[in-house]
Length: 556
Image 1 (tube, rainbow, N blue to C red):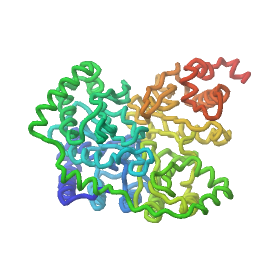
Image 2: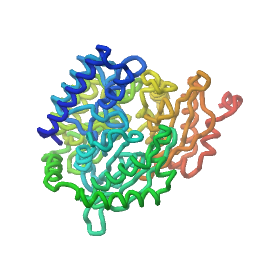
Image 3: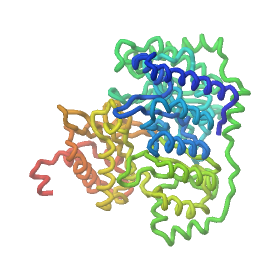
Image 4: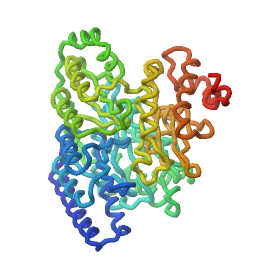
């Protein structure tokens, strides 16, 4: 993985020193909160309902065992002993004291981490496929591209005060695990006619109050043109984007209001101008970055112990069925560690669990971990021969929940338990759905499904692209939950359709049960997923199940 250069190190330390001085001025009263706000946001520090929240970047989801241990140390020393992994491949600490934040930033810098540009109207943390470098279907590891973009975009002088925040996602596989079509810019590594790799460039995606699917602006972009073309897109948006209304300031609105043809023409004109002065990527720099992501040396080994454990232990077998993904190297597997134990907060991890994961990464996964946008942790390179021993350790730490991709593997934002913008609770709804279907014993029967929950219209829980999406709103001071159906976050991305009127807090779990029981009755076989059934049948039978009359509910 990438390690900071001397320049990176000096840059981060300088920024930290600047912020320490700003915090001291805020504490002394020399800065008002209004004056301090843009300064703290540039360093990922929010003021939430009950305390400050610090958001730390995990670029393209890749983190080392050393870095994970440092996060555990930070959680114990300066927070309440845990952290929260987000859908943007960040980690959030929800309880730091303002005066401690400069020390936290220094501790992060000690292990090559920071919180720069995890907030504000700038280019945010660049995200990527959490199976990068391991996926069997991968055309090319997307992380060198993401690291190149990180270096280009960090503290870019033209893009520190964009009309709104700006997000870039990169995928290196035909199957999109990076939700690229929901990003302001999505990059998909593809092969051109010559066999050389380049990028399909998408622009104008985003969720929130006006969800849109990104459109292709360039079907194939040469690799050497990447940075000039990105600069052309962002600088065009910086000029054309609306600043009169923050709800209409995202690039998706700029593309929608001007039309793709006009926006593309402006970008291409700008690109030709920029390319004359900015020829593109320094080949030596790119080669150094690519070398940082050279795959480890994989050691194949006998798989007898793995198959024997599957045959003898149904708990282990269930875990391998749900939490393992095929690896590109023979005799290996990609392990997804679920952070969704039934009844727990999705994405939360204790300091003790972080240390266990770091130890397991050192022992079994070449010191590497990944954070997924589904709020789980990945051990990307594990020999199958080591899986029984790894599973035993995970089980002892309540990290062996066999539910990846099932009903209880729910994405949820922090909601009204933490967030000042939230209009309803998300965490309790996710917890209740998980424990309810566990008690019913239906998770395995229902099979693969994505449920995503947002506590407000900003859609941090990605509810628009869940097979079942839940949006919590405030209706005259009462929590009300709308349901959307048929969303998809992959390369065939579609936005879910609103089913109808919302449900009260105590009605939402029974509504989801009616919906999923209807699916079980309607599907043609166990192989037909909820999304496939919805696409085959349309919304009508599912809406009918959701909105049974009171008499029908009693009869049911």
